[in-house]
Image 1 (cartoon, rainbow, N blue to C red):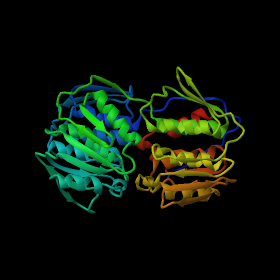
Image 2 (image 1 turned 135 degrees about the vertical axis):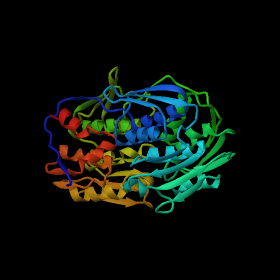
Image 3 (image 1 turned 120 degrees about the vertical axis):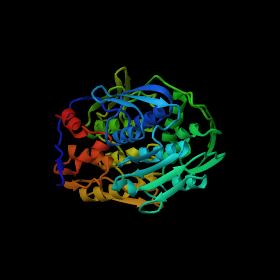
Image 4 (image 1 turned 90 degrees about the vertical axis):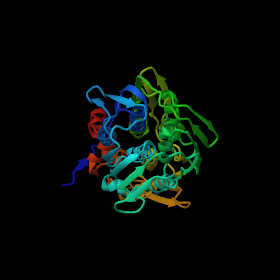
Length: 428
């Protein structure tokens, strides 16, 4: 039976101080790098969600020794210097795009025979560009349902590609997957990244974390060379709070005309979504860099619409669309065509749900841009498309507009299990 969450409107909002879970992007990269490393690695501040549990279960099914303590947000992984204990395994990545891309490449480069399954949602998401590259360097892939998609069987041994070209337009995760697992190849790998997102924030996170773990690589423009190594290790790695999750609360600052502090969020964050705070600053909010975390002061009468590129922090497109609906003039969000291929067709989903609320929204420029025209809004039941970010972002509308309901709020468990509980707690 489908569940529906009734958002409660808020008046006279007090200042908000909140702590969000660990970063999904950093958690899943850290789990991968720890498994590839030489020796035990203790991960602290781990995000426990559907996606990270999918990665952990896959690592366990591959034979890795993993000790999990959800209560204190820690995971101890015993890396085996690039070896996969069970080279004839079956795994299920569920709906985790990071697990799907990262583990596929790791298994292809490590060698063995594997069967990879996924959820129905993940079966719809693009894998073909990455799988085509793997097939071109000698990996055997047998599709069990639709060509170019999950599920499939993978078989490989003794790969030694000198150079791989990968396009970053549809997903930068393809490049991140190849970069992290390139350390397994005995002759190393030169990766040439092509397309519009070669300097994207998620690729930057990947490279910075590889450096932190001690993986040897060089980078010049869009070309990376990763050397073979089975000796890199890191005893302890602390995961940052999730900026994507933090931004829903930061967006409350101008929406509710209040001050919002998210604990342990600081300007030196690895995550691209830190750029959303600069957007709020451009709208008239004031940022304060406090010891406990960044505070956004949104006590302003109103704010204008703006034109901005969100190519490098596109996970906040839905959040920005909601903020734009309450502006005093139109907003144009540019360079986000790739979000059509994520958990849902996010461009279409944004427009559909804004229209329900009474807001005019247009997709233009060959699916690159969304223009939002603010106006009065009324009650609506918001479809979430099994997409956690649609649920979390559009819940913000209901803090100001009566009668907003969110279908299937449980989809937030993908990255932020207690989002709605926390939302209620901070807006009481």
